[in-house]
Amino acid sequence: MSTKTPIAVLLSGRGSNMRALANAAASPDFPARIALVASDRADAPGLNFARQNDLNAHVLDRGTARGRGSFDAAIEAAVRRSGAELICLAGFMRILGPDLVSAWHGRIINIHPSLLPLYPGLDTHARALADGVKLHGCTVHHVTEGVDEGPIIAQAALTVSRSDTADTLAARVLTLEHQLYPAALAAHLTGNDLPEQKAAIFSLPV
Image 1 (cartoon, rainbow, N blue to C red):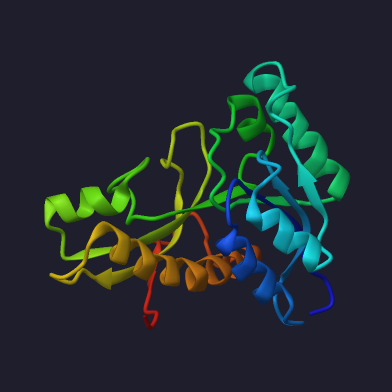
Image 2 (tube, rainbow, N blue to C red; image 1 turned 120 degrees about the vertical axis):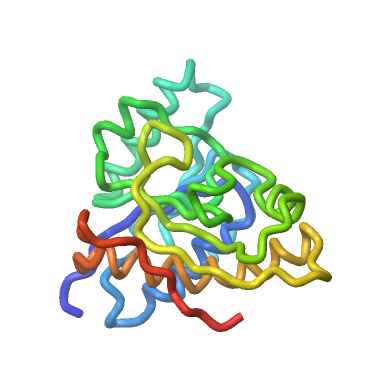
């Protein structure tokens, strides 16, 4: 592929979904390249991976930012400096403010560990098990001002086992996330997530 869309990946921890995107981006046929990996935590393991793989790594110092608006401005400045045209949230444990979301409308996507609109927010796996659901999974969606409320791009599902705990279910869903995020990003960049298109349930091996 001659032209790859530059993307910024924001994370707060280990960055396993960022790694999945980076591995996909290494393929000549993948429609994106990582222009920036940024974190609100200087000790995030994902930043170490980025540096070790010659990716542009940046720390967003939330300790010196005065309020959410200032922090969001720091995010936008870093993203624009990198030349990124799309922001991918990958375990970024901060809620983006309305000004940033508005400025990047349609250009911020996130991966969430549940089949939205079920279980927005935290502790998704424990909540799913408590409800006795038979299917669970993950969702890639556009980011809007409402938490985990944006239009869905794609989802992947698995069958919940009777032996699953919150930890084992989290690990199984994470395997799906690593497959779904690159596939959904590619679909988004190639125009396959048209507004009238219903979210696809990807059939992915576990």
